[in-house]
Image: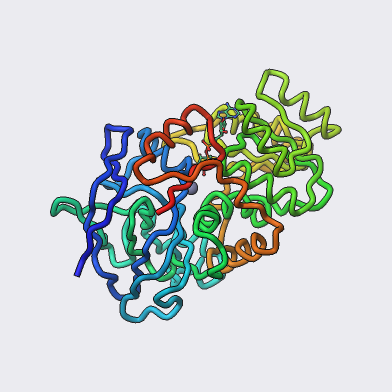
Length: 365
Ligand code: APR
Ligand code: ZN
Protein backbone atom coordinates (compact mmCIF):
# COMPACT_ATOMS: atom_id res chain seq x y z
CA UNK A 1 0.00 0.00 0.00
CA UNK A 2 1.48 3.32 -1.02
CA UNK A 3 0.92 6.61 0.83
CA UNK A 4 0.53 10.24 -0.16
CA UNK A 5 3.24 12.55 1.04
CA UNK A 6 3.36 16.33 0.86
CA UNK A 7 6.57 17.27 -0.90
CA UNK A 8 8.53 20.07 -2.61
CA UNK A 9 8.83 19.16 -6.29
CA UNK A 10 11.16 20.64 -8.90
CA UNK A 11 10.39 20.78 -12.61
CA UNK A 12 12.99 22.08 -15.05
CA UNK A 13 12.59 25.66 -16.21
CA UNK A 14 11.25 27.00 -12.93
CA UNK A 15 13.08 28.03 -9.79
CA UNK A 16 10.00 27.73 -7.61
CA UNK A 17 9.26 24.39 -6.05
CA UNK A 18 5.73 23.07 -6.35
CA UNK A 19 4.24 22.03 -3.01
CA UNK A 20 2.13 19.04 -3.84
CA UNK A 21 1.43 15.42 -2.88
CA UNK A 22 3.51 12.58 -4.28
CA UNK A 23 2.82 8.89 -3.92
CA UNK A 24 5.46 6.96 -1.95
CA UNK A 25 5.57 3.19 -2.43
CA UNK A 26 6.04 0.63 0.32
CA UNK A 27 9.68 -0.23 0.97
CA UNK A 28 10.89 -2.87 -1.50
CA UNK A 29 13.46 -5.47 -0.38
CA UNK A 30 16.62 -3.78 0.88
CA UNK A 31 14.95 -0.39 1.31
CA UNK A 32 13.55 1.57 4.22
CA UNK A 33 10.53 3.87 4.63
CA UNK A 34 11.43 6.95 6.67
CA UNK A 35 9.05 9.50 8.18
CA UNK A 36 11.07 12.68 7.83
CA UNK A 37 11.79 14.71 10.95
CA UNK A 38 13.78 17.50 9.31
CA UNK A 39 15.42 18.47 6.04
CA UNK A 40 18.08 21.12 5.58
CA UNK A 41 17.99 23.60 2.71
CA UNK A 42 21.39 23.14 1.08
CA UNK A 43 23.30 24.92 -1.68
CA UNK A 44 23.24 21.74 -3.77
CA UNK A 45 19.43 21.85 -3.94
CA UNK A 46 19.73 25.45 -5.14
CA UNK A 47 22.09 24.37 -7.93
CA UNK A 48 19.34 22.11 -9.26
CA UNK A 49 16.63 24.78 -9.01
CA UNK A 50 18.84 27.28 -10.80
CA UNK A 51 19.49 24.85 -13.67
CA UNK A 52 23.19 24.28 -12.89
CA UNK A 53 22.82 20.50 -13.03
CA UNK A 54 20.52 18.25 -15.06
CA UNK A 55 18.55 15.52 -13.37
CA UNK A 56 15.65 13.18 -14.06
CA UNK A 57 12.43 15.04 -13.32
CA UNK A 58 10.04 15.79 -11.74
CA UNK A 59 12.33 15.71 -8.72
CA UNK A 60 11.42 15.66 -5.04
CA UNK A 61 14.14 17.90 -3.64
CA UNK A 62 16.12 17.61 -0.40
CA UNK A 63 19.15 15.48 0.35
CA UNK A 64 20.05 16.59 3.88
CA UNK A 65 17.51 14.78 6.01
CA UNK A 66 16.84 12.76 9.13
CA UNK A 67 13.81 10.97 10.49
CA UNK A 68 12.34 7.81 11.95
CA UNK A 69 12.20 4.41 10.31
CA UNK A 70 8.51 3.68 9.76
CA UNK A 71 8.80 0.35 7.91
CA UNK A 72 11.53 -1.84 6.45
CA UNK A 73 11.60 -3.96 3.31
CA UNK A 74 12.48 -7.64 3.19
CA UNK A 75 16.03 -8.50 4.19
CA UNK A 76 16.80 -5.21 5.95
CA UNK A 77 18.96 -5.84 9.01
CA UNK A 78 20.89 -2.60 9.67
CA UNK A 79 17.94 -0.59 10.96
CA UNK A 80 14.58 -1.36 12.56
CA UNK A 81 11.21 0.35 12.88
CA UNK A 82 11.46 3.26 15.33
CA UNK A 83 15.18 3.92 14.79
CA UNK A 84 16.39 7.48 14.27
CA UNK A 85 18.34 7.67 11.03
CA UNK A 86 20.34 10.19 9.04
CA UNK A 87 20.01 9.81 5.28
CA UNK A 88 23.11 9.75 3.11
CA UNK A 89 22.93 11.30 -0.36
CA UNK A 90 25.47 8.86 -1.67
CA UNK A 91 24.55 5.30 -0.81
CA UNK A 92 27.35 2.79 -1.26
CA UNK A 93 26.64 -0.34 -3.35
CA UNK A 94 28.75 -2.38 -0.88
CA UNK A 95 29.98 -4.65 -3.71
CA UNK A 96 32.36 -2.69 -5.98
CA UNK A 97 36.13 -2.67 -5.45
CA UNK A 98 36.01 0.76 -3.79
CA UNK A 99 33.33 -0.32 -1.33
CA UNK A 100 34.99 -3.58 -0.33
CA UNK A 101 38.27 -1.74 0.24
CA UNK A 102 36.64 0.76 2.63
CA UNK A 103 36.57 3.65 0.13
CA UNK A 104 32.82 3.75 -0.43
CA UNK A 105 32.97 7.48 -1.25
CA UNK A 106 34.34 6.55 -4.67
CA UNK A 107 31.84 3.68 -5.09
CA UNK A 108 31.16 2.92 -8.74
CA UNK A 109 27.96 0.91 -8.17
CA UNK A 110 25.76 3.54 -6.53
CA UNK A 111 22.87 4.94 -8.55
CA UNK A 112 22.31 7.88 -6.22
CA UNK A 113 23.40 10.45 -8.80
CA UNK A 114 20.72 9.06 -11.13
CA UNK A 115 18.18 9.48 -8.29
CA UNK A 116 17.42 5.75 -8.44
CA UNK A 117 17.30 2.87 -5.99
CA UNK A 118 19.88 0.08 -6.43
CA UNK A 119 17.54 -1.93 -8.71
CA UNK A 120 17.03 1.06 -11.02
CA UNK A 121 13.51 1.84 -9.80
CA UNK A 122 12.07 4.92 -8.15
CA UNK A 123 9.75 4.71 -5.13
CA UNK A 124 7.89 7.90 -6.09
CA UNK A 125 5.13 8.82 -8.49
CA UNK A 126 3.22 12.01 -9.23
CA UNK A 127 -0.08 12.09 -11.11
CA UNK A 128 0.51 8.50 -12.24
CA UNK A 129 3.97 9.26 -13.71
CA UNK A 130 7.37 8.44 -12.27
CA UNK A 131 8.96 11.05 -9.97
CA UNK A 132 12.52 10.97 -8.65
CA UNK A 133 14.00 11.53 -5.17
CA UNK A 134 16.92 13.95 -5.43
CA UNK A 135 20.13 11.92 -4.95
CA UNK A 136 17.94 8.95 -3.96
CA UNK A 137 16.90 10.84 -0.82
CA UNK A 138 14.14 13.37 -1.56
CA UNK A 139 13.94 14.59 2.03
CA UNK A 140 11.70 17.62 1.35
CA UNK A 141 8.77 15.25 1.72
CA UNK A 142 6.91 13.80 4.68
CA UNK A 143 8.03 10.31 3.67
CA UNK A 144 11.05 8.91 1.81
CA UNK A 145 12.06 5.41 0.72
CA UNK A 146 15.84 4.96 0.67
CA UNK A 147 18.28 2.05 0.34
CA UNK A 148 19.27 0.42 3.62
CA UNK A 149 22.88 1.52 3.01
CA UNK A 150 21.71 5.14 2.88
CA UNK A 151 19.96 5.21 6.28
CA UNK A 152 22.37 5.34 9.21
CA UNK A 153 21.14 4.78 12.75
CA UNK A 154 22.07 7.44 15.31
CA UNK A 155 21.21 7.92 18.99
CA UNK A 156 17.63 9.11 19.58
CA UNK A 157 18.89 12.00 21.75
CA UNK A 158 20.11 13.85 18.65
CA UNK A 159 17.32 16.21 17.51
CA UNK A 160 16.25 15.78 13.86
CA UNK A 161 17.17 19.35 12.85
CA UNK A 162 20.75 18.74 14.00
CA UNK A 163 20.81 15.23 12.56
CA UNK A 164 19.67 16.46 9.15
CA UNK A 165 22.63 18.84 8.92
CA UNK A 166 25.04 16.08 9.90
CA UNK A 167 23.79 14.30 6.77
CA UNK A 168 25.23 16.85 4.34
CA UNK A 169 26.83 20.15 5.29
CA UNK A 170 28.47 18.94 8.49
CA UNK A 171 29.70 15.63 7.03
CA UNK A 172 30.97 17.46 3.95
CA UNK A 173 32.78 20.18 5.91
CA UNK A 174 34.17 17.89 8.58
CA UNK A 175 35.20 15.28 6.01
CA UNK A 176 36.97 17.87 3.86
CA UNK A 177 39.07 18.86 6.87
CA UNK A 178 39.62 15.47 8.48
CA UNK A 179 39.31 12.88 5.69
CA UNK A 180 40.60 14.83 2.68
CA UNK A 181 42.93 17.58 3.87
CA UNK A 182 44.12 15.89 7.08
CA UNK A 183 44.63 19.26 8.82
CA UNK A 184 47.08 19.13 11.74
CA UNK A 185 46.79 21.14 14.98
CA UNK A 186 48.51 24.50 14.80
CA UNK A 187 48.45 24.81 11.00
CA UNK A 188 46.78 27.69 9.19
CA UNK A 189 43.64 27.51 7.07
CA UNK A 190 41.49 29.81 4.97
CA UNK A 191 37.85 29.11 4.11
CA UNK A 192 36.30 30.94 1.15
CA UNK A 193 32.50 30.99 1.47
CA UNK A 194 30.92 30.55 4.88
CA UNK A 195 27.40 29.26 4.26
CA UNK A 196 26.30 25.99 5.86
CA UNK A 197 29.19 24.06 4.32
CA UNK A 198 31.89 26.69 4.98
CA UNK A 199 30.77 27.13 8.59
CA UNK A 200 30.95 23.35 9.02
CA UNK A 201 34.52 23.45 7.72
CA UNK A 202 35.32 26.14 10.30
CA UNK A 203 33.72 24.06 13.06
CA UNK A 204 35.95 21.13 12.12
CA UNK A 205 39.07 23.33 11.84
CA UNK A 206 38.39 24.61 15.35
CA UNK A 207 37.95 21.03 16.62
CA UNK A 208 41.27 19.83 15.16
CA UNK A 209 43.08 22.93 16.41
CA UNK A 210 43.95 24.80 13.21
CA UNK A 211 45.34 28.29 13.75
CA UNK A 212 44.85 30.88 12.40
CA UNK A 213 41.45 30.16 10.81
CA UNK A 214 40.60 32.82 8.23
CA UNK A 215 37.00 33.11 6.97
CA UNK A 216 36.14 34.87 3.70
CA UNK A 217 32.60 35.83 2.65
CA UNK A 218 30.75 38.67 0.94
CA UNK A 219 28.14 38.75 3.67
CA UNK A 220 29.01 40.39 7.01
CA UNK A 221 26.43 38.33 8.93
CA UNK A 222 28.08 35.13 7.74
CA UNK A 223 31.40 36.42 8.98
CA UNK A 224 29.93 37.09 12.41
CA UNK A 225 28.75 33.46 12.45
CA UNK A 226 32.20 32.33 11.26
CA UNK A 227 33.78 34.02 14.31
CA UNK A 228 31.31 32.28 16.61
CA UNK A 229 32.40 28.92 15.15
CA UNK A 230 36.10 29.61 15.67
CA UNK A 231 37.39 31.81 12.84
CA UNK A 232 40.25 33.92 14.19
CA UNK A 233 40.11 36.43 11.32
CA UNK A 234 37.44 37.42 8.80
CA UNK A 235 37.90 39.02 5.40
CA UNK A 236 35.67 40.14 2.55
CA UNK A 237 36.90 39.18 -0.92
CA UNK A 238 38.85 41.95 -2.62
CA UNK A 239 41.74 42.33 -5.01
CA UNK A 240 44.09 42.19 -2.05
CA UNK A 241 42.75 38.93 -0.59
CA UNK A 242 45.84 36.85 -1.32
CA UNK A 243 48.17 39.51 0.18
CA UNK A 244 46.01 39.72 3.27
CA UNK A 245 46.01 35.93 3.73
CA UNK A 246 49.80 35.84 3.22
CA UNK A 247 50.22 38.58 5.83
CA UNK A 248 48.03 36.83 8.43
CA UNK A 249 49.67 33.44 7.89
CA UNK A 250 53.25 34.55 7.35
CA UNK A 251 53.52 33.44 3.73
CA UNK A 252 50.30 31.67 2.77
CA UNK A 253 47.92 29.25 4.45
CA UNK A 254 48.77 25.58 4.85
CA UNK A 255 45.23 24.72 3.77
CA UNK A 256 42.55 26.51 1.74
CA UNK A 257 38.95 25.43 1.22
CA UNK A 258 36.45 26.75 -1.33
CA UNK A 259 32.86 26.25 -0.20
CA UNK A 260 30.86 28.24 -2.75
CA UNK A 261 31.17 26.37 -6.06
CA UNK A 262 32.33 29.35 -8.15
CA UNK A 263 34.96 29.08 -10.84
CA UNK A 264 36.71 32.36 -9.95
CA UNK A 265 37.04 31.58 -6.24
CA UNK A 266 38.25 28.04 -7.03
CA UNK A 267 40.87 29.54 -9.35
CA UNK A 268 42.04 31.83 -6.55
CA UNK A 269 42.80 28.95 -4.14
CA UNK A 270 46.45 28.27 -5.15
CA UNK A 271 47.31 31.96 -4.55
CA UNK A 272 46.12 31.67 -0.94
CA UNK A 273 48.35 28.74 0.09
CA UNK A 274 52.03 28.55 0.94
CA UNK A 275 54.53 26.33 -0.87
CA UNK A 276 53.63 22.74 -0.03
CA UNK A 277 50.10 23.78 0.87
CA UNK A 278 46.91 21.99 0.02
CA UNK A 279 43.82 23.55 -1.57
CA UNK A 280 40.51 21.71 -1.46
CA UNK A 281 37.50 22.26 -3.74
CA UNK A 282 34.45 21.56 -1.60
CA UNK A 283 31.82 23.75 -3.31
CA UNK A 284 30.33 22.13 -6.37
CA UNK A 285 30.33 24.27 -9.53
CA UNK A 286 27.75 24.08 -12.35
CA UNK A 287 28.17 21.35 -14.99
CA UNK A 288 30.93 22.02 -17.56
CA UNK A 289 32.99 24.42 -15.46
CA UNK A 290 36.60 24.32 -16.68
CA UNK A 291 39.07 26.14 -14.45
CA UNK A 292 42.28 27.87 -15.38
CA UNK A 293 45.24 27.85 -13.03
CA UNK A 294 48.94 28.66 -13.33
CA UNK A 295 50.42 25.17 -13.62
CA UNK A 296 54.01 26.33 -13.17
CA UNK A 297 53.21 28.12 -9.90
CA UNK A 298 51.42 25.00 -8.67
CA UNK A 299 54.28 22.70 -9.64
CA UNK A 300 57.12 24.94 -8.45
CA UNK A 301 55.36 25.58 -5.16
CA UNK A 302 54.72 21.87 -4.62
CA UNK A 303 51.10 22.78 -4.02
CA UNK A 304 48.17 20.37 -4.26
CA UNK A 305 44.70 21.12 -5.52
CA UNK A 306 42.20 18.38 -4.77
CA UNK A 307 38.49 17.81 -5.14
CA UNK A 308 36.40 16.71 -2.21
CA UNK A 309 33.00 15.16 -2.80
CA UNK A 310 30.88 14.83 0.37
CA UNK A 311 34.11 15.09 2.37
CA UNK A 312 34.93 11.50 1.35
CA UNK A 313 32.39 10.54 3.98
CA UNK A 314 31.83 6.92 4.92
CA UNK A 315 28.31 7.40 6.27
CA UNK A 316 28.19 4.35 8.56
CA UNK A 317 31.46 5.39 10.17
CA UNK A 318 31.19 9.18 10.11
CA UNK A 319 27.54 10.00 10.92
CA UNK A 320 27.62 8.24 14.32
CA UNK A 321 30.96 9.93 15.11
CA UNK A 322 29.56 13.33 14.28
CA UNK A 323 26.42 12.62 16.32
CA UNK A 324 28.60 11.68 19.31
CA UNK A 325 30.72 14.81 18.92
CA UNK A 326 27.52 16.87 18.96
CA UNK A 327 26.21 15.05 22.05
CA UNK A 328 29.56 15.60 23.78
CA UNK A 329 29.23 19.34 23.17
CA UNK A 330 32.26 19.45 20.88
CA UNK A 331 30.52 20.18 17.58
CA UNK A 332 27.86 22.91 17.96
CA UNK A 333 25.78 21.85 14.95
CA UNK A 334 22.63 23.35 16.52
CA UNK A 335 24.17 26.81 16.17
CA UNK A 336 24.28 26.38 12.39
CA UNK A 337 20.49 26.50 12.29
CA UNK A 338 19.48 30.10 11.70
CA UNK A 339 15.87 29.42 10.62
CA UNK A 340 13.45 26.60 11.38
CA UNK A 341 10.74 26.63 8.73
CA UNK A 342 7.75 24.66 7.47
CA UNK A 343 7.77 22.91 4.09
CA UNK A 344 5.51 25.72 2.79
CA UNK A 345 8.27 28.26 3.40
CA UNK A 346 10.91 26.47 1.32
CA UNK A 347 10.85 28.83 -1.68
CA UNK A 348 11.53 31.84 0.57
CA UNK A 349 14.47 29.97 2.08
CA UNK A 350 16.03 29.50 -1.38
CA UNK A 351 15.48 33.18 -2.20
CA UNK A 352 17.29 34.15 1.02
CA UNK A 353 20.12 31.76 0.11
CA UNK A 354 20.46 33.42 -3.32
CA UNK A 355 20.89 36.75 -1.54
CA UNK A 356 23.72 35.18 0.53
CA UNK A 357 21.60 35.29 3.70
CA UNK A 358 20.93 32.69 6.44
CA UNK A 359 23.50 30.22 7.81
CA UNK A 360 21.10 27.29 7.39
CA UNK A 361 17.34 27.01 7.07
CA UNK A 362 15.95 23.67 8.20
CA UNK A 363 12.49 22.37 7.33
CA UNK A 364 10.92 20.78 10.39
CA UNK A 365 8.07 18.33 9.71
N1 APR B 1 33.18 35.43 -2.41
C1 APR B 1 32.99 35.07 -1.12
N2 APR B 1 31.85 34.51 -0.65
C2 APR B 1 30.86 34.33 -1.53
C3 APR B 1 30.96 34.68 -2.90
C4 APR B 1 32.20 35.27 -3.33
N3 APR B 1 32.39 35.64 -4.58
N4 APR B 1 29.81 34.35 -3.52
C5 APR B 1 29.02 33.79 -2.59
N5 APR B 1 29.63 33.77 -1.38
C6 APR B 1 29.15 33.23 -0.12
C7 APR B 1 27.70 33.52 0.20
O1 APR B 1 27.57 34.80 0.84
C8 APR B 1 27.35 32.38 1.15
O2 APR B 1 27.60 32.71 2.50
O3 APR B 1 29.20 31.80 -0.21
C9 APR B 1 28.29 31.24 0.73
C10 APR B 1 27.58 30.03 0.09
O4 APR B 1 26.80 29.44 1.04
P1 APR B 1 25.36 28.75 0.78
O5 APR B 1 24.68 29.45 -0.35
O6 APR B 1 24.69 28.66 2.11
O7 APR B 1 25.73 27.30 0.24
P2 APR B 1 26.17 25.96 1.05
O8 APR B 1 24.97 25.17 1.36
O9 APR B 1 27.11 26.31 2.13
O10 APR B 1 26.92 25.19 -0.12
C11 APR B 1 28.11 25.71 -0.69
O11 APR B 1 28.99 23.57 -1.27
O12 APR B 1 28.18 21.40 -1.27
C12 APR B 1 28.40 22.52 -2.02
O13 APR B 1 26.68 22.43 -3.69
C13 APR B 1 27.11 23.12 -2.55
O14 APR B 1 28.24 24.47 -4.13
C14 APR B 1 27.57 24.50 -2.88
C15 APR B 1 28.60 24.81 -1.80
ZN1 ZN C 1 24.01 19.32 0.54
